[in-house]
Length: 498
Image 1 (tube, one colour):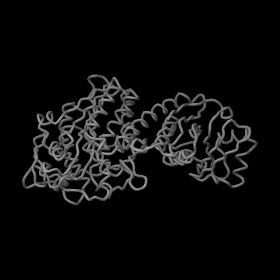
Image 2 (cartoon, one colour):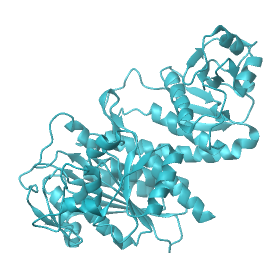
Image 3 (spheres, one colour):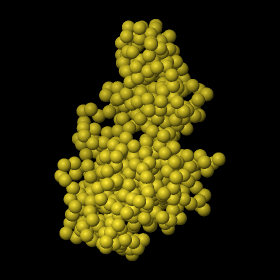
């Protein structure tokens, strides 16, 4: 999708469709008012006739437009004539793009940056247009023959006043970078596990390093991890014929002496549960167990595209969890890279087993902070549903920074406690700790397990099992939490500059 900023007057604009807002009580937005003047009061006539009330998320297409260079107008309801909440602004954008994407249009123009939005500037509003529109038009087609409903939309023009152009261009650049990162994440996650293997993920990292001069990629093989003593990670990989990979991406955008921000993403390209085999229903969705790893790739892509003045390291432990005869078994005791021993009580709690060795490995980068993201527990769905990601961590400043970024990005999180008392559930009679803590507080005890390997740095954990993909008829990856993490990095970059 191509996006551009347009400062010329609306009456001179040429497009297949122009999107403008209208309010309750027959009130026209400024752009709608301009169009009304140049179309012989067409819009006010439509409003008086009651064809559209102006309620939030109302839409109405006008296909015959007199005295106008645009072929169609889409009216979008904005509700009461007062500043929109950020969520309602995104809702208005969503209904707009959903209305037009079904038509065989090649270009559209949108004037909705003129809407007043609470606590939001033009840069943010412009960015949201790109993010929301790109999310809505994403289609996974690489494994299909050409579909009759393929979206033809290719160009989006965002209209702003001339004096606002520079702010709009900043928002455009941010939106394009985040959208590209989200699309990469969704594409990798939606690929089937017979294509998107650990080796395939490693190849994508090497490709990204070739695309951006500021990124270096290194792939640790099984033999390398054996030398490092990653007994926990490799125990998970033993059950698969696909060789495990530990993918490292290093983005050098800051001062060479600046400590990096380390992002760790769980990269289970398929999770059958191992010997603790999952139920058949819904097991196909376990190709999404690598969404954390995909989101690390997407976030690094966005950071590199924006040329952020930061140093960032992305670590992706990639493997499958399969029930082979060589797979680890309930009751096995593993020795992690840290030296801590782990009793495996459930082989389906494998994500924490590959993450714990990766957390230990992250220490060699002397990180400023470490953030891991993983589709780790079904329990987070029970606790929070599919709206926020779960957030836990050992540092209040880091967690608060992530919450602030989530609010700006509209990529919500909710913090859960990481109290010492929960560690009691991980006690083992035979090892330093068990890999599960029982049926109570599953999301919290999973994070408590990881906390044992994050004692030497500031650390936060994002459980994205409820937010990384949609299920049902709309099944597909969401690309979250790339917007959240990119906003966090943008905030860090802005703070560094000031």
